[in-house]
Length: 195
Image 1: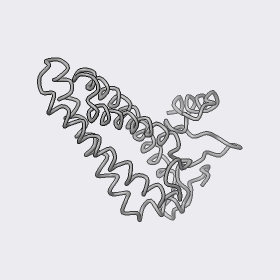
Image 2 (image 1 turned 90 degrees about the vertical axis):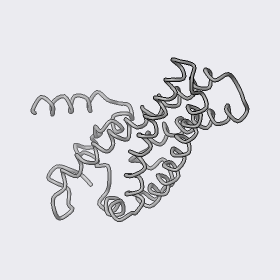
Image 3 (image 1 turned 135 degrees about the horizontal axis):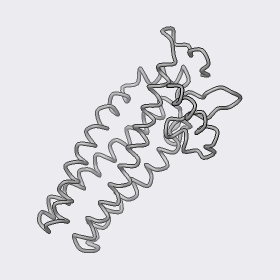
Image 4 (image 1 turned 30 degrees about the vertical axis):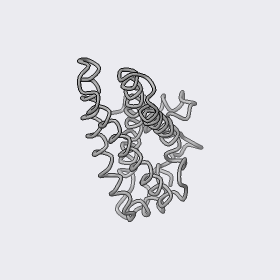
């Protein structure tokens, strides 16, 4: 446990990039850790119906992704099932749009910004790349650009970006849970944490 704390402090000291906060490590300013949510943001998060919507859509999207990935991989390995693989990517993209729109509404309710709130800035930046790749796939299908294999390779690129982005959000969820452990029953920061 002590080694873990030492290594976290060392990483915080050496990490001068903005990615440390995205991976769940807190940057220290004047000796105090910055929590993911302020007390008011935490309250708004807890009462927002969009929190539940995001909690349902995220695992649903991941399940759709796994099915689609299997179908895309099957096509790339066997050359069979292009139509069903194509539809699976289209469905995955529609679900992505749904989670992006509802996530933006959630971010506005909790942080007062539609996108790029401090707490989720880098996740939102990478989400734009994920959205762009999925949208490019839809355009390629609509315009009939390339053959099935090239289209499925674009889908795989979009899926690789999605996996990275999902990992960012999972790490942020881990950081939020760690922050929660630092709060006592009255909703005040535990000793040594800053709000």
